[in-house]
Amino acid sequence: MRTFLAALLVAAGVSPALALEGKLVLYTSQPNTDAQQTADAFMAKNPGVTVEWVRDGTPKIMAKLAAEIEAGHPQPDVLLIADIVTMEGLKKEGRLLAFPEAEIAGIDETLIDADRTYFPTKLITTGIVYNTNAPMVPASWLDLAKPEAKGQIAMPSPLTSGAAMIHTVTLTGNLEQSWDFYAGLAENGAQASGGNGDVLKAVAGGDKLYGMIVDFMPIREKAKGAPVEFVFPTEGVSAVTEPVAILSTARNPEAAKSFVNFLLSEEGQKLAVDQGYIPARADAGLPQGYPDRSAIKVLGYDAAAALANDMANKEKFTEVMGQ
Image (cartoon, rainbow, N blue to C red; front, side):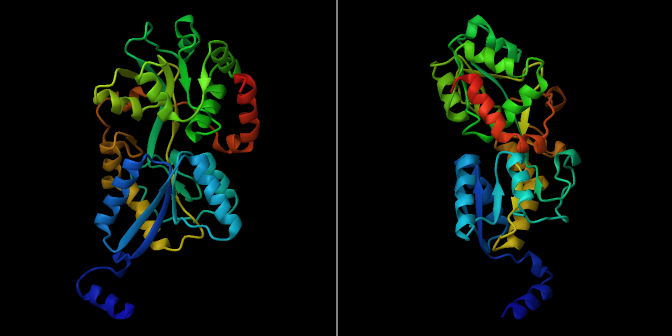
């Protein structure tokens, strides 16, 4: 039957490789709406494929996957999660499928894994959100340690958010104050708990006046009328690339490869822009509410070192913040 179908496709001028079918299982840390939009856009181009997705924060997604691997039944074909540290760990364990022929045109080579096992889909930066009723308009990370912000700072916990852990490592590695910066935040009454959504809720609702948060959330909510503003601090911002990767145990690797290529394509990147993200491809444009790309300073980050020091960094954060 497959040979006959392939012959029909060739006769019709369609490559059999494009006739994808079956189920594609995606594990992602995208917000629910974005995950559904991404799945729907891919399925519209590949009607023979049904995307089933599971969404949660990266640490919980990874805990679920680890349990499945332990049981000998990993479920996902594709991972689309917050950070490259997690991807580095999976690559080290041989859990990712190399995809050297991935269509990476227009993607900054410095953002791509040299072994082509995971690929950037976005640049999601972390900066400062403030309530428009706040007495101070912050411009620097150090402003969060000022008296005006005392007891008014919300921040996601690196213990529950992959992006927050990358942010912590980035700031301590780039700011002159290093961990003393976080010690100053703790003395100023900063609270680290939950994820970025919790920070947005606290600041938009006025329970807190300042927060550390990923860019797209407050920019989106401001457009809807929320009393918030987002700041790219003068020192620079941390960034996660929301990488995508194919599991070496993928049950539908061809559909998985097509999904990766879709995310990296001009169409997939413009979908990211429409969703309110900075795309990995510079030629895909920018969402409304963002400054020019050249005005966004992204601080350096060593993923391999962060992986090696992950537990030590979490322990240090707990110690410094008194949590």
